[in-house]
Image (tube, rainbow, N blue to C red; front, side, top):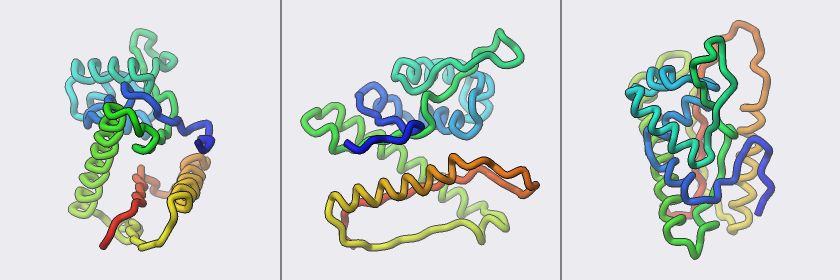
Length: 189
């Protein structure tokens, strides 16, 4: 198996995949990835979920090994939560011979794709300039062997992770959170 960068975790167990297949938990994970350590109340505001619901989902995410307590902020009475790693990776094929885990991996990928699709549709319906001119969509048909497809994925990961790891320049430009997602898989037109 390919060595993962230190800020990308290889997901390899059923509990984590099951947690990721839930849309609300995935939204909490996304909020933590974008905004960093946050309180239950703040996560509720970001996701539109009730505080009690957020608490339940946080417990599941802790039990799945996906988040942990963060150091206290200004108010030591408030619990803050953070991601264990900002990136995650798995393939459905790595669970061959484990039907329950393979089904959970498929569900987690389907939930992720659904969230990405919904966000992109929302952008198309509400895009504002200059972002409408800057957003990128692309499609390329390739002929690849399985090992070449895996190498393409590693190269895309390295490119995207390089952008994520960069220091944000303090130059006064309008920077916003951007979701970059890519899917590469064998299919026919």
